[in-house]
Length: 304
Image (cartoon, helix red, strand yellow):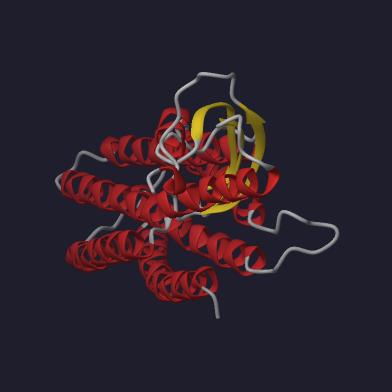
């Protein structure tokens, strides 16, 4: 099993665990919110459910992205993960609309029953808050260890759940004290958080789908110019996903080199880029002779 597959399988294990925890958290909040008639707690439950949706999208995307290249997909299937993440972003916007619409309807019903919130609300919110804190820290640590942008992004999303739940706890206490309108205000704030999370997911993933640059040109140039025999580089282009970056560039090398040695220098460039950027999947190099007299880094056989 190669390094990429090992990493993908490790990411999937993390997603399965966090999926189960997120479903438990969401179910507890939604069930209590409906039973007590609390829009804020119900909305917070749906916000937690978006984490589970993210996990499902991540599992599907990682599973499909593990498929090897084939004649129809010579560059592989890595963008399936991005497509799944984009779908998650759209679902977040729809969920934000649902939460906001429910709050608006409640605002137009002045005779609606007051939420029956008791001490159990704080037990439910407190326990689910602890679970969210654990999930966010666990995903962040594993995301760093596995160099997984998806896990790091999902951890950031779960941290937003922590902030939202803390706000809902405060709003619930105020509702219990008689300030019912704050339940609607809290639901509106939660809807805004969900919408912002959806916009963030779309903004990031649409960049990958539109082949935005994934590496800094200056960083690539710095690596290439350290390769013996290379005088300059230009037309550097990068695209792909965080875990499968594709690079193409032009290099100008010592003009006196024959085909064999020019080919050797070209592969040194490819190896240097892949070593400097482990997530690079492929490098295409167009090799050109430099102008006579142009300086280049000394070649190994010229030192002898």
